[in-house]
Length: 336
Image (tube, rainbow, N blue to C red; front, side, top):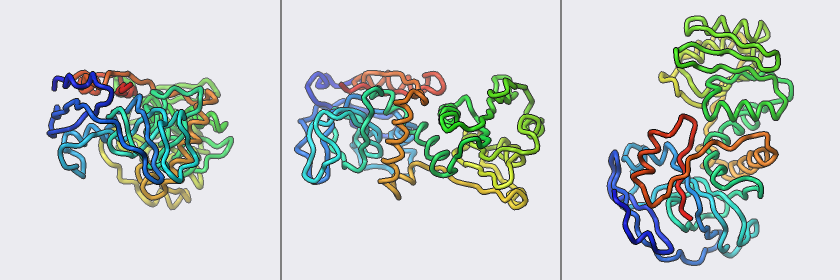
């Protein structure tokens, strides 16, 4: 996968010519993109995220296989070069991110204006594009799906993961009462309530009772669950009356089966949190919520996801770092 020497020219793209682990990625010189059409924006890309979806896509393991060759990448950040007819929300020089626009691993990208969001002046572009998946999931789940209110009790499972950390920060921003569960290397769990400076450690078999001790009989108004497996039922059993379970993912392994009588007795709701679906079905809402999330980041209440920036024209290094970067660190391709 040695990069093509033509990458020394002004414009290039990483083209996938063969699926695999590793895939066949060739760095190819490209002409400057044409003028944007109606409703389009031409972006000079500075950074592009290497997401889990991208990782599956270039291996041919995603549910849809693009025709080869293609330029991967779904999330990019850069500077607006020009705008097409009908575009009024952006102008040349604006800092923006694009999300869900295939072809982000290139120095230029033509993107629909409705897939773009302005980045606040004090938010770094690399940090912004690195944070889209985790931080928007956290914001969409708590603010939109759960309608989090000040003072509500929020239990965050997997609080040491990228989504979990973002949920803790957003919940604190909304002045919620935050409780966390963090799995330790020895397989035990730290259960914490920062407001009361309380932390105790329990084993897997004692998670349900440990949560009852942590939360008391009142339970949690909202459970944020990006982990699944055995964690879910233990948390559901500690939901409050009219509690909400946010189903975000299954990082711990198995997809849990929740006894529905528990939901009935608690008047509880199970709510799916899927930003990919929001992008497809409610594009305007996706863009609005991403902008709201960046606003919280610009206030300093939400830290950008840590990222490791790797030159895009050294894809061997990019591929290797995806697997070896520290947990919770996003690999970001530098294209400028």
